[in-house]
Length: 199
Image (cartoon, rainbow, N blue to C red; front, side, top):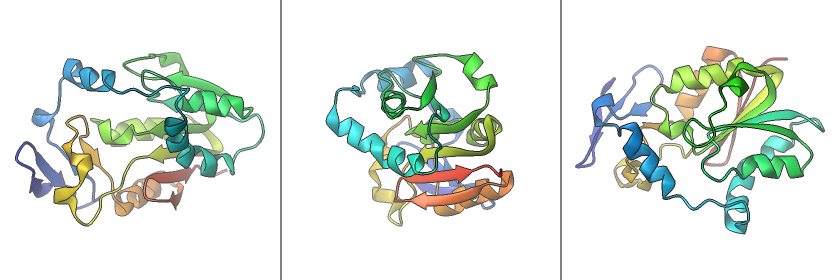
């Protein structure tokens, strides 16, 4: 990792191998402060705007799923909504969120698809965590990520101002991760990445 940027509050380092940008461990929040930020989120299943936001991932991912496919929503937050939307569309869902809905048993099973919306940027060990999610996919299964990718103007990017955001992915980062795990990568818009495990 080499020095990349400082925004006056935190340092940012960039990996020369995978292109990931990360905040050093000593500048990350402790679990209590991290959860306090998540508690401020007002994400409700009855909010049409929030549903429209989540549909950016759900719609392109659903196009690849067989009827009745089984999925896991990883990092669902205090008001699980994406899992409900998939259930309403006829899919079977499990939920796991380390802070709000701990379900370690769900992390020991395999699924046809796994979603992680606005989660990847919070991961302290992204390679390990996302790698475990890949291992929870059945052959031919899909991992759907929603996280904003690094823009050219990193210094003025609003995403880095959230103190709970500690890792930032580029197109190259996602392509590197896909190669490491033998996945097929499809980028759907500026926020959505779909990764398929070989069948």
